[in-house]
Length: 308
Image (tube, rainbow, N blue to C red):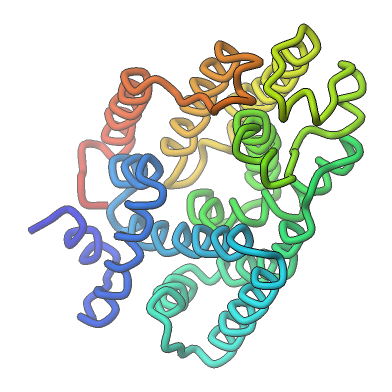
């Protein structure tokens, strides 16, 4: 029996049609977010893996709708999707395999419904995003989009009852992770007119959008990149030290996520001003060391059990 089938069994997903629905989402996530899927498969309890996959598939599908095509097309596609998901949450039925998997996961983890509704209410923030004037604008974006999107999965990984500390730790993680994404994805975002570094920060280093678009490797651009990567590192290191982030069944996975993000920050720092020509990736060997070390920790936490 495959590891995936064992995970479906452990999650109590027995209906053949529903197993097929979840399998389709597993394929989607494994293709689109391969590193994330590998980490989840290695580090999550089997009973949680299908549900985390379904939540990740919702986030991945939403990202595609919000980011792909001309704005009118994106607006229409998102509105249709949001209406379909909300109707399914109210009726408990859907013809869409992704939404059917989401409905089952929401039934098994009721706290997820509120997270989904928050995400649907705020995700259009990304449709309007073209850049930030100030740091405060960036922080508002994290609150309105980055955190609610992450919590689709994050709410499944934390403690059953959260007094607010876990969400706050996730917010710190996302503040650092999103900032790292924005500086690391300069080469991808600039041609699309989406710059995630605030204009006031560019001005502080006497850097213009044209400097970045032209790939200039001036002292100002180098200092700008160094500043943004270091600001991301501060948040990521803070998140790693927050006990609440390690609570719950996904604690080991979240710790590995932070460690891999820090490896990415190191790679971005080494690339420096050249990020405007192409992004940096964490070293494969270092990533594997993080995952294997986390796998040992996960097994120790579960007392050697492999099916819980």
